[in-house]
Image (tube, rainbow, N blue to C red; front, side, top):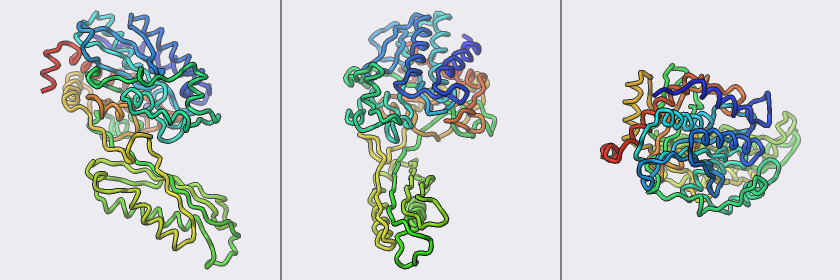
Length: 428
Ligand SMILES: [Zn+2]
C-alpha cells in the first residue's frame, strides 16, 4: 500500500487557496464563506472514493467507510480545517488530508476491515475566532461537553455571536445529534504539525505524543490612575507597578509547586504605554501548563493568585480583577490528556518498520485530541514544523514529512481496523 505524495500536495495546496486573505497566509474562519468552499471540496473528495458523507448537528463533516461489522465501534481519524487569521496551510489541514489519503489508499487497494472507519473534519477548532476558551468546539460537542450558553456569549471580530454566525452559515445546532457515545468510538487518531521547533531542529521525522499537558488561563486587569510622570511618588496608583509585582509572584507561586507545572505571564497590555505618563491600566495574560494531575487536585490556583492580589491591591491602591479564561464546563486548569498506550507502542513499531526516525513529544496546545482523550482511546502524531513557526503565513511542513506521518498512521489504522480478534489482542 502506497501513500501518494501528489494527492497530498494537491489537497493541501487546494485547501490553502480557500482563504479570505490571498497572498497573506490562510484565513479560513469557522462558519465563513471559505469554510463552506473548503467543506464542499472535502465532500467531493470523500464521495469520489465512495464514502458515506454527512454533517452532524454541529456542522462537523464525516466520511464513513463501512467495515465488515457496521455495528462495531468506529475508528475515527482526522483533524480541523479552520484557521486563525493569516495562518498557515498546514495547521489542522495536514490531519484532515492524512485521513482522506488513508481512506483513498484503503479504497484503491480494496482493503477489507472489520471496524468502520470515519474521517472527521472539524471547522471550529481555533480559539482565536470567538476568543479564548471557545476553541476545540466540534470535539467538545461530540463528547457532549459543549454548553449551549457559549453560543450567546462568544463573539467574533465582526461582533457576531457564535449562534448568529452559525445561523448565517445555515446551521441550527443540534447538540443531541452531534453527541457520540463512548462505546461507539474505538479510537480517535489525529495527525498534526508540531507547531514547535523540536522535530525540525533535531531532524526527526515523527513525534509521538504520550500526553498533552493540561492548560489553565487567566486574565488580570490592573486599574490605576493616569497621571503625568511628574506626579508625586507617594500618591500614585501605578497599574504597571502592581502588575510587575503580580508577575514576580506568579513566578514564585508556580516555582514552589515543583516540576509538574509551569506558569508564564507572556503578555502585558499597558495603557497608555508612554514614557510621559504613569500607567493607568495593564492587562496581563497568565498561561499555566500542567504535567502532573496531582497538583491541580491539591492546589487551588485561583485562591493562591487572589491572596497575592489582595496584598498587592493594599500596597499599590490599584484595583485588580482576576478572570479565569475557562472553557464552560471544564475546570481551569484542565488535567493533562493521556494518549492510548497500546496504540502508541504500535506506532513506535510502525516507525521502526518504515525506517522513520521518531521521538516522544509531550507538548502542544489545545488540540481536538486533548478533548477526545478523556472520552475514547486517542493518539496524536506530530510531523515537523519548519523552525516551529505556526499560525503564520510562513508556516511550513515538507510534503515528504507529511507523507511519512501518514504512513505511520496508515500502519496503525490498518492494524487496528483489521479484525476483532486482532483488536482485542491489542487491548490486553
Ligand atoms: Zn490545529
